[in-house]
Length: 171
Image (cartoon, rainbow, N blue to C red; front, side, top):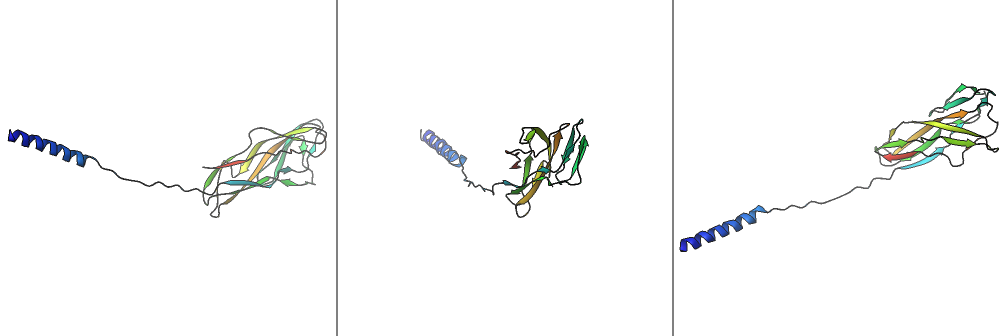
């Protein structure tokens, strides 16, 4: 009987011993780093400059992100160019981070005082698609587009009061 009690106690103690060594724990800390928010601001508006039209043939003016322009169809670019500028945006944020650029994908309508319209589309940028913030956390995006001019387009200044949106997001 003593042997059975001793054996039973040995089993119980060995079980407790196994249970005591079968459990282990560790702890970890958590942290987060908030980076400088990405910010975009307009530095310069887009301007296609002076454009002459043919009375019977439509055409386009393609303004590159570098600020140069070419014409197609019934459009000519007079020697007196007027103000020709690609749109320009300044981007600031965390040093060295990359960012995605989203340009308009729908036509922008510009209107003169007598409600005549033209469309602007096919937006392009430099850099295109993605950019990288410098070591000081800055970058510049230049944006060009295509101006669609109708045959016999009415003379006057055409504008869009609401502008167009360029979006940047960290990658």
